[in-house]
Length: 267
Ligand SMILES: C[S@@+](CC[C@H](N)C(=O)[O-])C[C@H]1O[C@@H](n2cnc3c(N)ncnc32)[C@H](O)[C@@H]1O
Image (cartoon, rainbow, N blue to C red; front, side, top):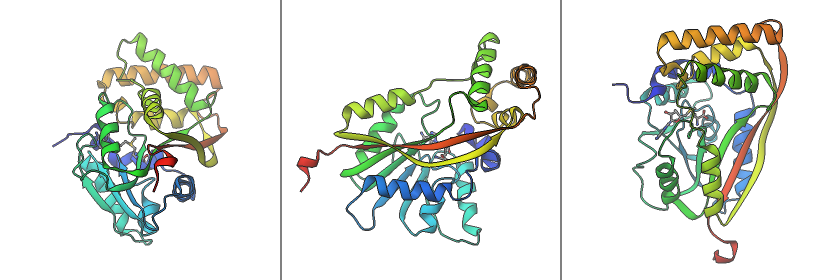
């Protein structure tokens, strides 16, 4: 039974969205460096863990890591990694992050990485994340931050405007700033760190292929998707000279760390 839009795209998620070699490992190190959790073996929950793109290095390193996801397809891809030569045996739970099957205050770190896009009732997910987090723990929002004037960002803006004229926008609720603002207001302390920086080649064609395989976009009716991508392709060819024009971009992985216990309250 299909219960998540991600089931449809799970088999292609890593093909289009894999991070360069060493980046997930750098993100793992940044998570521990930035949170300075006192426990020598912190318990970590990754809500919306997906295929393990970010979670896998935690598994390989033997961390006390639990991944939760709503999509059986995405979890299946994560589990499939266990057959890799670097081994590891992920602890994965299929559940809705808005109704977690865990007791209160049991995790030292809760990761929320690219999980809020299109999620209407994000507040429930946020409050569940806080419920299972120990008072001394850290809640971490993570995201890939491409340059604002880069190919992906420009293509994304153009596609949004095309979909608007076709009156067929996918659910483009961008909840990230609401989530960030709410957590920052509730937190005793918050900080932002860059966990990794890398360069990558981007082409308009690459964006179109990736987007075609995105969970929210692929849920649109087929004729609208095709019209929108055709229009986007002709705009991109005129704007960049060719769909295969290649641009080198610098991308970053940004972590926002929220702590809810005042330092003065710590034992
Ligand atoms: C864009 S993917 C990101 C996956 C992973 N965090 C990463 O960055 O590679 C979003 C993931 O969140 C999951 N997800 C969305 N809503 C969820 C919910 N309410 N509870 C649990 N998982 C959810 C989706 O199934 C999908 O696997």
